Picture 1 (cartoon, rainbow, N blue to C red):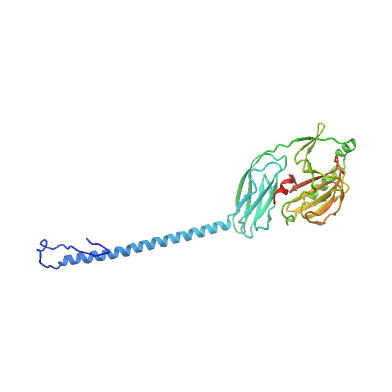
Picture 2: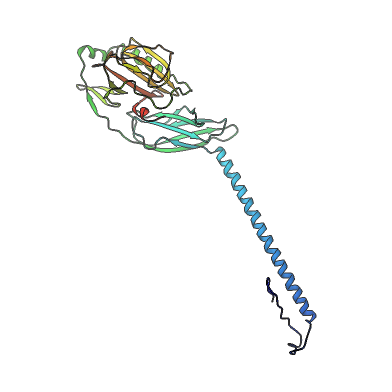
Length: 340
């Protein structure tokens, strides 16, 4: 038996029993061999323990290195999807931001069986905007993002959301017999075709900055999505907001962009201006009394583009202001309250 560390004492075994008291005896050869073996085993034990600990430390460092390499490689091709909301309602704008996309790869966005264009942002991420019109079917949906990098498999990620129903009130309006003639005029088809063609214009560059502004300061007399009725005749759901203001009140551009339509001869919509803000965002201004811009003009946020009037199908002086996302009419007021 031996003790390590501190003062070491040995009690060796002797042949023929214990020595007599007072007699000095040296350990036997066998005893000396036992002592040497014990001391050697103690030294080997210490060296073995150190070796085991060293092996364990090396293995742990190697494992941590492998995990770090895996994590960084995983982040290199895995991207993230961020939705502006997971519980939008009819009439809302859904912003989809994509982060962590590998440089040089191509992304596409799919929602409700339709592909949406993906554009770059100033933040270095990618984004697409989706408009949910007043008649969008409520329910559970998924936003699917596909990323294709050269020489790699297509990566797929998706986010779920629930589109909630919004109750739009019914509004009864009345027009003079002269104004009622405008509703069924064959000239209306030309106006709709020109507006539809303008809505197909989409520039990749984002031209708007920050929140939008109200084109005129006035009371809202017609909300987005309201169901318009003339007697028992359904005219349709309102595709924008009506802002009441005195005639000749200056109308401002809600944000910067390019004029894509400036039409003074519209029969139903009255004098009309449309501005392309880039990346599928378009605003429209109806029933103007006068127009101060021409097609292809570059306008800044707050620039005067016309004046309030009552041209076209209007009961009095007001501005109809609408906002479209990839040709879909949505509620423009949230764009005044937050930045997209």
